[in-house]
Image (cartoon, rainbow, N blue to C red; front, side, top):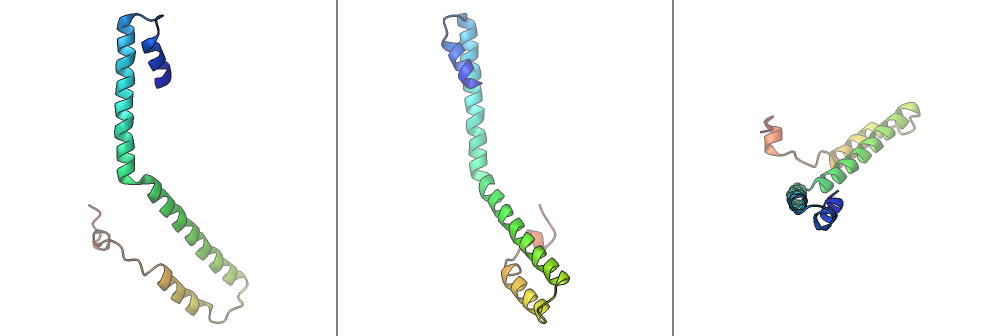
Length: 105
């Protein structure tokens, strides 16, 4: 869209006042785009998305393992080993203090 407006702002087919308006619109859109990219970069949405995707995959593995063992139990000490592994993998990460206190603000 900005490419078309930029082209129209330099076209001789368009009046000079309309060219100025198109140039102003292109500048505003570029400024808004810059602000949005800065916010996106500082919030690291891509990194957070990947972390959530990884967590979902790990959760899916846990659920699959539990379902498999419930359907076809073949390990007598499965629960003990499962809980030990779960404690090592999951419970070793401490939530932030504000989450632990129940205050999200």
